[in-house]
Length: 268
Image 1: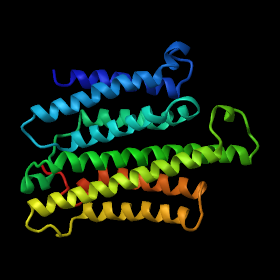
Image 2 (image 1 turned 45 degrees about the vertical axis):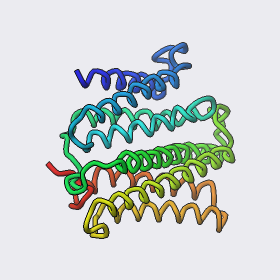
Image 3 (image 1 turned 90 degrees about the vertical axis):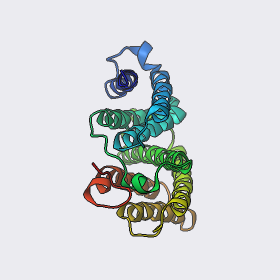
C-alpha cells in the first residue's frame, strides 16, 4: 500500500518524460500541460516523503536519498520549465523518473552515521539544504547542456528550432543563478551537517570519504563562480563547469556511498 502513492508520482513523471522526449505522441492538449502534470507529481511526492518520514521508525536511507534528489530536480523543473525553457524538461524529468524508479527497487540501506549520531532536528535541516543545493546544480547543468547545444547550432548556422529557446545571454544568466543558488544551499547544508556532527559525535573531524568528496565538489563550484566573477569567463565555461560538477554529484550519490567506507556510507 505504501508504494501506491509513488506509483502515481512515477506515472506523472513518466507522462512528462514521454511528452518531452517524443513530441506529438500524447497530443497537443496534454503536452501543453506537462508542467502542471509534473506539479501534481511534486505535491504527491512531497506528501509521500513527509508522511513516510513521520510514520517510519527507521532513519532515512538510500531509497529516501534518491527520492529526495528526484524531488529536488522536478521542483527545479516546475520552477523554470515553461515557455522558452521548456527544453530543460528533456533532461531533468527523465533523470527524476529514473532516480525515483531506482529508489523503489534498491535495498533500504541506512547511513552509517545515523547509527552513531541518531536522529536530530539537524537532520531534516541538513538534508533539506543539501538537496536544495543539488536541485540548483541539476538545473544549472541542464541549462548548460541547452546552452552548449544552442551555441553549437548558432556557430554552424543551423537556426531551425532555436526560435523556441532563450538567447545565449539569457541561458547563461539562468545557469549562473542556478549555480549560485546551488552553491549557497550546499554551503549551508555542509554547515548544518558540521553543526550536527559537533553536537552528536565524539570525533567530528575524522576522515570521511563522502565529506572529502563533497568538499571537493564545493571547491569545484566555488572555483567556477570565481572564474566567472573574477576572471569574467562565462557562457561556455559556466556550462562546462556545471555539467562536470553535476556529474561529480551523481557519482557521489551513487558511487562514493558504496565504494568507500565512512559515516556517510550505507550499511546493510
